[in-house]
Image (cartoon, rainbow, N blue to C red; front, side, top):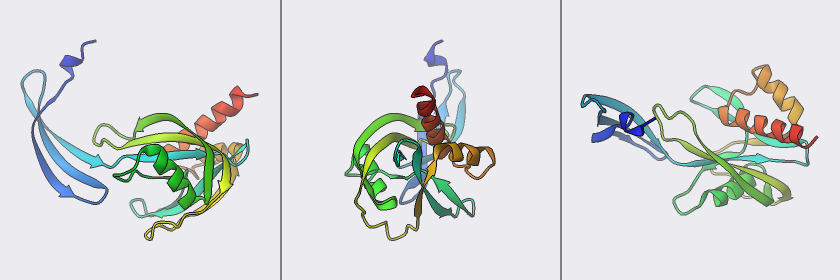
Length: 183
C-alpha cells in the first residue's frame, strides 16, 4: 500500500489558542486528489505513563479529580515532559511526586498516540520496579492520593467500569499479560 495516496500536505496552519499544555490549531490541507480540507488539531505536550510495580503482583495507582469529566479517576502515575527533560527523567520524577518512590529499575516499553484523529498527544510508557521510598513535592496545582492494588483486582475494576482511563487500562493489560507469561 502506497502512503502517497494517504499523505496530506499542510498548506496553512492557524493557531486558535495557545495554552500551557496544549495549542489548538486549524490546518488547511491538500489531499492526494488535489482537493482541500480543514483539520482541527490539538497540539499537546508529550507525556509519560508509569507501570509501577509494588512487588510482583501489585501496581501503584493514583486517585485524582479530573475536571474535564467531573469525576475522580483511578490512573497510573503519569505526567507531562518538561522542556528540559527526556521522558525517562519525567517518569522518575512523576513517580516520586505522585507515589513517593524512586525506581531503581526503569525500562521504556512503547509510545502510544491517544487519539491521532485530532491530537498528536504522545505518551511514552515505562515499567518501574524495585521502588525505594523517596518523595518529591507534588506540583502545587496537583492533589493526588496513591495506593497499590493487586493486578487481578484492577482487571475486575476495568470490567465493572471503576477504571475508565485508557492509559491505565493499557497498563493493566500489560501487567496481566506479563503475569500470564511468567506462570
